[in-house]
Every structure is written in C-alpha cells, then in structure tokens.
Length: 403
Image (cartoon, rainbow, N blue to C red; front, top):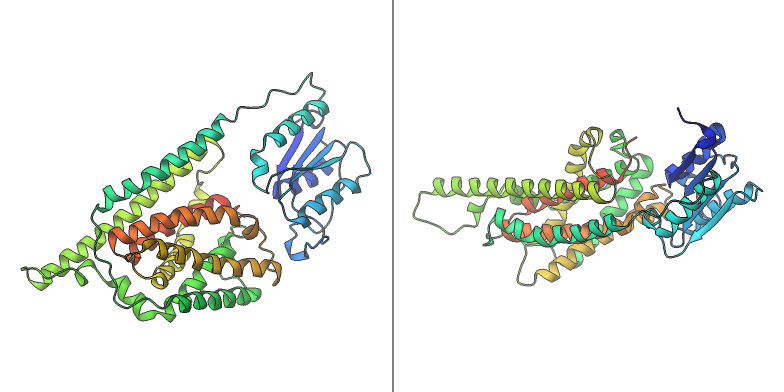
C-alpha cells in the first residue's frame, strides 16, 4: 500500500493535470507536474481545449515545469497554477530549448525532478542521473532500421519496378492542391456538428481518423472512375502482350497484383513491429495493447482512404520521383493546416493535433519515402496505400490515449 508521506506523484501533460487533482485528496509528500494540461480558459486557451474546468488546490512541495517552445497559453496557465498557491514550496520554471514532448527526454528535467524528490523525501542525496545510452541506442537503431527498410522492400517486392497501373491521367498539380484544401476545410467545418468516429474512443485520435476517412472518401468520390479502375486493376492491364491466351495473362496478372499487395502489407506490419519493439526496448512504451489493436481496423480503413486519395492526386512515379514526393508532402501539409485551423479558429479543441504535428511530420516524411518506393516497385496505388495505412494506423494508436 502506498504511504502518502513517502510518495511523489509525477505526470506529464494530461497526466500532469491529473496528478495535481489527485494530490488534493491523496496528500503526497510532493508533486512533479511536467507541462500540465491547462485547466482554466486564460491566456488564449479556450474552454473547449480544457480537460477539466476547475483549478485544483495546489499542494505544498509541488514542482511545475514546462518547455520553452510550448504554446504560450500552456506555459502561462502553468505559471498561474504555481502563483495561485501562495506557497514558497511551490515552484514553477521553464526548461530552455524544449517542446511539449522533448521535456520527457530532457536531462535538465530529470536532474531537477530527482533533486526535488530527494529534498522532499529527505534523502541524503539525489541518485545519479540515469544513463542516456538507451536513448542514443534508440536513435541509432532507428536510423539503422530506416537504412535497411529500402533494401528490405526491394527484396520482398522485387528489385525491378513493375509498370504503373494507371487507367486515367493524374489531375494537374494545382487542381489536386485546390481539391485537398477545399475538402479538408469542409471536413473540419462539418465536424463542428459531430465527429463520425467518436465511438472509437481514442482521445483526439477519433477526430483525426474521422478526418482521414472523410477527406479520403470525398476525394475518391470526386475521382470515382480513377479510384475504381485503379483499385480493381491488376498488373495484366498494363503488362505487354504474350503468346499465352488472354485469360491466362489476366489470371497471372491478378495473381501478381495480389502477391505484391500481400507483400506490401507484410512489409508494413514487420516494419511496425520492428520499430515499436525497438522503442519498447530502448526508450519508451510503444507496444500496442489488445485494446489498441481492437481499434486498428477503423484507423487502417481511415488511413487507407486518405493515402489512396493522395496516390490518385499525386499520380504515378515518373522520371522525376523527387518532384512527386515533394508534391505528395505538400498535399499532406495542406490537409494538416486545416486541422490546425480547426484548433485555432473553429475551436475544435483537438489540441494534440497541433502539439504532435512535428512528430506526424517526421512520420509522413519517412513513411512517405516507403510509400513512394512501394508505388514504384509494385506499380499499384492500392499496394502503396495499404503499406502506408498500416504504418500510419499503428503510429496513431501508439500516440493517442484510449478512453
């Protein structure tokens, strides 16, 4: 059983707000709240962004820390929490050169928290700071995984690219950009009246999944003929004629298409397991629980619709694949700006989509390279979208809390 007088409660973000509230009843020896979620509509924070709508009484021996590069409203609200206690044992400080997530890996935060706990619990001295070798190993191992991912895909899917399955020309780049802007804005406007996938019960992940599903479905409807034809097409539709009967060519092409589609899915699953298990071993919890896997089909379907629509707009991998890759990333960025607009101007309250945007940017940059390579090797927009959807769905399920 926990002894309050020998217990330090600590939490980050939503957890930081929770420990401040729990401390009021549990009365621990001390509290460490790192970047606590705001609990009052002040300093630009709107009511819809609040997890709780009343400010708890701040207990003695409370340490509140925030990162320098966090949203101003979050930092100022945390400072107000410390000031409201009127207690010199309640201390607030800003950690330089840190964001909302990087504070979790900051040696400054670790040293400060250890020293604070040692003082509050009257320990002879703070324990030595844990080695950061695990974090270094995590980064180096992740770089290694990214370096071998390309050769791995080529070994599984074939080193010689297949002809791209294109049954209609891609839309002009300006039209694709305009379409994704309009459809994304319409989606976030309609979500003010209800979010379709709320039943998924993934904190703010249900909003993102609904966005992917809505934007992807509408864009596929706009390009219905291309979406239908490319989805149902097989390699035989673009393969050169042979001496075999027509039905044999078609059957061989469809078998090849199924093999490439299955290979793409297997590659994505293996990469997901490899990355999450590496994070689990070296840095932070990333292995999906059963409750999270239960939500995987919905996230996969939503991500597939979005990425398949992007493949339709971006068109086949041509002579200048770098230009296509940049345009593909531009489409993602335009869609994501609508999500940010919904937070800052439409009061959606989905603040995690802004706080986590740098990490989603990294995910799309690296996963986008794999998606482009799969499209080049298989010639199939469907295989590329399946590959990307598995990685994106797994990433979302790791990040967003289950409610």
